[in-house]
Length: 261
Image 1: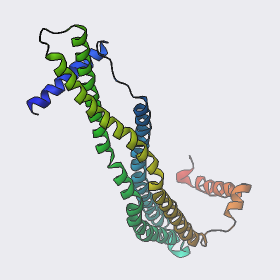
Image 2: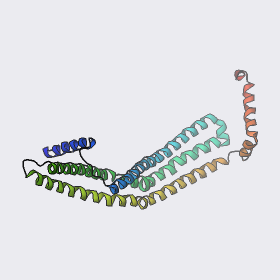
Image 3: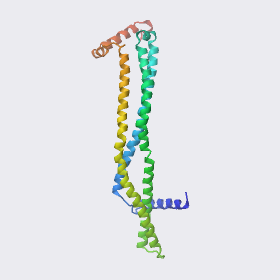
């Protein structure tokens, strides 16, 4: 940091201290403060959306990976019995196809149509926040110089040149502050308003990708269903399924090695 930059930083720090002590009046712009609150709300929502969008893709991968582990375990559990009726092998194949074909096919479009656009939108925030920070610095500098002019006006210095010099410095700081303040006050609402038309295509893609995944998953699980009893749901509703389970457990309890369970 240069000496000039260091001095400005120290001056701003001193001005903030005096503001807290009530010795320096802070410039307030309600229009800017309103837009800033709206921007912070949008920024927070966009960053959360970015994290959740990535989390959704990670969750799909984790879910199919878990399904594959379950399928492998069930297939091993059924063993030769599963090979005879085909149910466990069919389930395993359906899950493998869902992971190998559907998830991998959706990965590219999901990144291109959803993740990448959201990431690009969020990438603007650091630059915008830097401008907001710069505005705050210029505001503090202007407030400090304005306070200096006020003090010199109320209590003139022995050097009559100090007041005109302070006024010129304050006028320059005011012009720089107001220019950046106006720019942010006008452009922040535009960014906020553009969020919806920008996100619309990604939202549409998200719905379509979810629909495709659900349809593919349903289709593949429907192929497995042919190996299952058609009246399972009715048996569950009537309580017959519970009876079947209890009957099998009773047979297990009848074995000497499990008789104490």
